[in-house]
Length: 177
Length: 373
Image 1: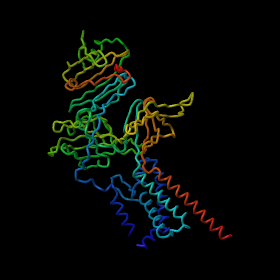
Image 2: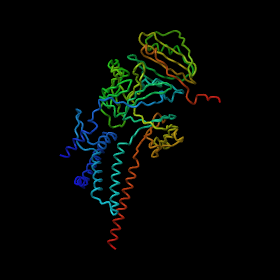
Image 3: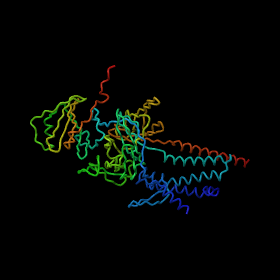
């Protein structure tokens, strides 16, 4: 009898059977530093800080990193890739991306030059397609060319902001005393 | 009362306790092959009752767990000390042996309750002031503020149960609709109109628990978020499988939500300076794994380098850091962090038992010598 009582008691006391309280549970707030999401890639000679809402995907063989971004039902992908060359044919690349959107090739193309913390870069946007767009920032850095590419729903690609770039600690010149 | 105490101190009961412990140790050892160490410890050694779960989800108790058998033995030893052993100098050895055994059993119980294991994952050059525990994720609600600061509400794992009602006063109420101990994440082609955030584009499918590899389960939840005036803002999926924040707009403020691995913060930071994976010359056979780390403790002004390598853990501020694993072409080191506030218990109790045995031998020997002379 005692054993049965003990058994029932143990059964009832087991946490599995204790139901969560219907009362709301609160916890004390804490103050913390916001830590940025940084792309850690051995192959990147600079620091890329991406949005904490982007979802990391497995990159394909040509990419160093790949992310999924969304806004409500709109979706797009962001990828980072590199080319080991100091010279690139921008028109050929633009036509390659236009081909991905099933758009006719262009005869000439003048990209928009911009200045980034790492130097001069070029912004390209292909938005002739009714629903899909491609937006690419190309910049030369040392012996490579880097491609930051958005590809997806047109409205989202247009709104999407490029991740921030900064030189690695070792590359930041020391301040003069 | 005395009758109960005498009954509890019976040798028969102590033997039953020992037999019970023997059975679950043996049982747990075999079950560990399929269930893994983490779940075996939880189910067999750190529980009151061992349950059998049928395929339809019904649970029935089948045996007492380690806590019951350990308690039975501890009570037996304690009552023996009170009722059966006279507290005289000639019994000092026996008293110490019993006290040592009680301390040993109590120590193992406290270790189960208080010890915490986590992992410190560092890339070369990276600094962290926290380790993570993948087995017990926490729900993080973050409100970013100025100067790179944020107010965070962290709901620990034990509060995350289906039906639980979590509240951030003045901002939102969260109701946990579904809780999956393990799940698979699949990209959905058609957006799911029932869910917000990444749940629109990723399906969370419940799958059976993977007991074989510790920390390999992906815990996911479906939560309903309400504003303070009880208006449903929508349903979100939060999962360990996607390491990304989701934004909920409340009172024109963006609140970030995420189910992340439990973080155990320390008042000091650890930086991985270098990880080495040495092999025997001419082979790929590992010779040594080591992590050169720097401890920086601002409160004590301590800043020193320590080399952690196989069988040479770092013991610091109540934590023990073991070299556990590595990755990313030897650029990443995984340190197992064990925090056990009662780690000295087995040493002390063994010392007491050894002293008791020595005294008992000495007393018996002197008694024997007295008789013969």
